[in-house]
Image: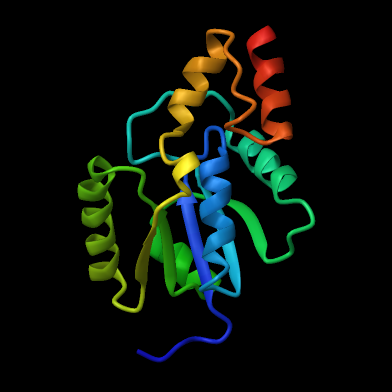
Length: 166
């Protein structure tokens, strides 16, 4: 396989909200990619009820990565393979927290490779301190008034606090 120059990676997800685990994966992806595009899916492959609107998520993620020029944030609809072609990406970054994530992620990676054989998927595990964090857990704890400050960056914490005061 020839290495494209520059290496552009897509990091897709719902990011509702982005957590320190997501941040860790995006930043560590820069070890293998020159640029990482955090791609917020307009429609989820999982049946989830969203807490934040897609544009709010994009804005939050931009705030989290402010000043980090190698990380771009956007939303998308449709197939990830189409976005990859449009953006010149040959790498998909996916985070794995537990074995339970692997089966689904493997199926998605194989389907994406069938649809675009030039697209590779790289699985990364978060730092141990972030390995149990999920957006859904953060939402649940925040909704019940718990302290999630260790699991999300300040802009996200501020928005979560405001959201649950509404």
